[in-house]
Length: 332
Ligand SMILES: NC(=O)c1ccc[n+]([C@@H]2O[C@H](COP(=O)([O-])OP(=O)(O)OC[C@H]3O[C@@H](n4cnc5c(N)ncnc54)[C@H](O)[C@@H]3O)[C@@H](O)[C@H]2O)c1
Ligand SMILES: O=C(O)C[C@H](O)C(=O)O
Image 1 (cartoon, rainbow, N blue to C red):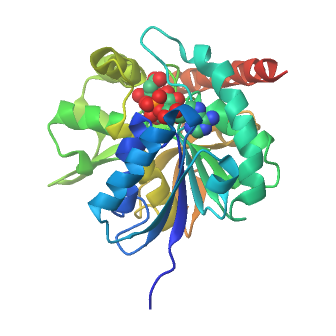
Image 2 (cartoon, protein in one colour; image 1 turned 90 degrees about the vertical axis):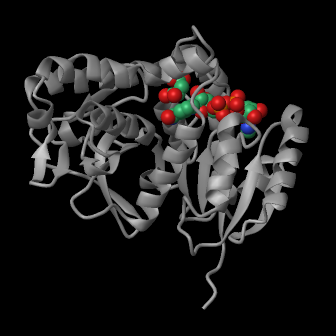
């Protein structure tokens, strides 16, 4: 039986993440190889010609799963009936800028787009916010779209999760697919806490803890953490542009696992609305370890938290509390 297409919105689709992301979605990397899609691409008027060009390329690529393309600068048309919304549109951080500098530019965009999504998207639309400050933009979107269930609004920390897997795999010279269960706690910013205390590696002798295999706590508690925290800035320094292909690929990972489920015994990191788990103040969008099943995420419970982790988890929560109040001051 033919599967009905799902409608996927990408905002900021003429930008660099958008350009990397839309072909991935059209190839099935986000919703699976058997799921047809209709792409809704939104950008702003100055990018309308570029957006038209992206649509032309999508047509030229003749993707078998792509059943239609809506390319528009009209937010209402863009949001109509969408099942998945990937919010990439916004003002990116440039070299030397702190993420807080882009706050005021982006929170007002997210307030406006929240209303359009609430009114016009499918009732069960799953929302992923990528644009920075990702956690706080997602929180603003949640606050200004009160009828969208809070469990449907998330932000991207999967890129940080994947970066942590990548660093461990390079250090141990093992394939990245054999490393799992790192955790990114908190904000998608330089205060995030990449935690390997529960991470494991598949070896020929069975599963082994990352800490045991690395056998260098100084590196794990120092350079590893700062490398992951600063990776976004390092990419900006090298490319003079923020990460795009890895952000696009991680956005696909985030939605795919959310919709199709995480493998048994594996969790991933997602920025989700805090319910107070692990002592994190409710009312923040905070990155937690989650497992997904039947289209729902669930925070992995019961992980032991040592003093070192506690301090770092609280520090990044504190930054989110400050961002939240700064965001509200930008809106007033
Ligand atoms: N969460 C993450 O892991 C992560 C990783 C990388 C980048 N980012 C963030 O993603 C965002 C996009 O990055 P990029 O490199 O693609 O930037 P970009 O500047 O290349 O693209 C952004 C696009 O958004 C468009 N845009 C601006 N305002 C808009 C609006 N109101 N509605 C719709 N579109 C709008 C712009 O015209 C542009 O085409 C940035 O905020 C960046 O900091 C997040
Ligand atoms: O840090 C940034 O602004 C870029 C992006 O969020 C990233 O992590 O690559």
